[in-house]
Length: 253
Length: 249
Image (cartoon, rainbow over all chains, first blue to last red; front, side, top):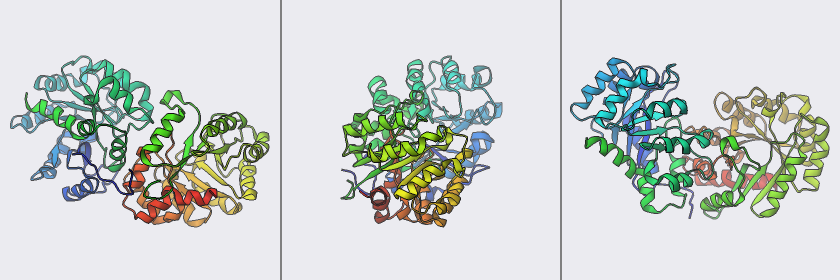
């Protein structure tokens, strides 16, 4: 039964939270403690966080700033941002040596004016695939055609596709069919009745909960997933189990 | 019902928009409503400028589940001669409870006199008009500040409450300035703190829950209200009490 207040009833590991200020947008929170308070309000136990500065300005500097957000915080897991510069790859390789790298998020290709093609991103993608490090890629920023063409060249690369919107309704199914190593993060995918067919065709293991906080409020999609009529075991996979598995597969390389 | 309170979704569609996957399947819509306790959804068809075609489709849709769906009439100034007679037909003969307008499908801003016959009809009948508001030049909510005082018998609802800044602030200012302006919450931009801001600045009695169903899932959109950091009293007002009062149901 629906009540006036909501907290998640399964363990939740949010796959998509940005921290820090953007150059053109101030974040509603300024510290790990503030973020943790908002997570706690919705019953979110853990979050994979990246620094927003890495999206369009500098992956290198954003990643450096991320360190202060995760230090001593067991609930906040770092996700490092990558761009196609040699400096960025070198930084990731350095982070990888002590085992700090469990996933990488591609910077905002659109805002940087770059096509997502192998002759620009090939070195990065090849290295990620060889090291079995999963890549987060935004469909809000990367044309689906480029995602499909480029990722098909790296069949071993595990990906999480972010930011699909109701406008992607006719794209998501075919894209997941084309990319068997791809998962779909659900923060913006809210067309009526669009998630159950994906579960039926691709299985619950291909879907991942993320909030896209602070661009989007943290609670609404989580609330919605709790009311899809899923078995508790499937809801757990969606809200945390699948993300744990994706990151663990990278760790077990 | 949620916690004993009636829940009314103030923003929904009849019709198909295949490019986005939108499909007005009543079973799917009712399933989503039932999953979270939504009692009724307000629906309109905005895809036909003659009004009549879409209003007939809406009436037929509502007739299948009259306890669950509420029809709103749609007219467009692209066919100005049809507006007043079609409103009369839709309200008096089809039982429509309110009016929807969609200036984005026209070249006419909300303050263009071409809309006056709609506003005047609502003013004379004491009806609600819900309009799309947002970034499109014809739909800026600041126009409501000029129009609403001229038609005090009508109640104006800013669909999407302006959607994003600076239009959200325009919508809030319109509600603050005009007692007959209300703000509706659905938006695919689910920015944090928006519901809280609308309630804080315009008052909970002026905010209405809407979802844009079936374009968007009412579960996710009602989640915006239920997970917002506002009082339970405010949630009840937003979820249905205000809509009940406005529609007289």
